[in-house]
Image (tube, rainbow, N blue to C red; front, side, top):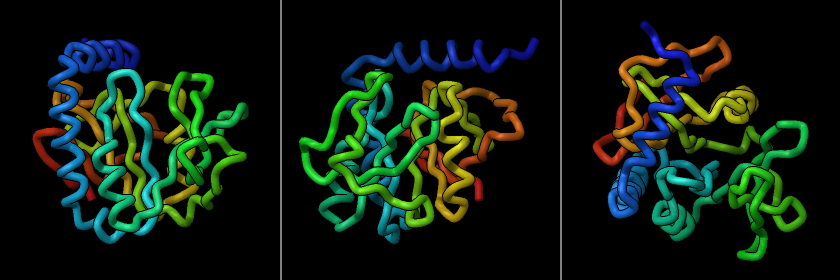
Length: 189
């Protein structure tokens, strides 16, 4: 019997939470190193990333590399209407926890980017498969954002523990161009 998206989310979240903090730190560093070595990121001027929350892959080391390399890093801000915007914090005090408890840029202390300026979107996920399908938390923020930046390369980020045999994407689910885990990089484009 095929699992529902809700059941798969529970399975993938349990697998991610089952990783020790030490393993998550080690795997996150490997993911950051793989990202820094990807030509598509080396060529990108503007990267839309995320701040890890709960037990997601932490991209801090990649963010440091990107800033040192002269990249512009934008991060998600979600308004009350459910739309996601790309904001570039102007200083270290340009951050606060949003209504979900995620470290997010403050609009009044950030520069807003048009989605068309974004070259690459780094996307956290709850689960993924080997076909470029990503399972998110179910709120649809990224799925509504992707059509606004159709030229951007979409890269899913996750730990191998979150891999599923095969996800059944909905019509609105955007496939990923790449997947990066601690074990490797997979291209789907």
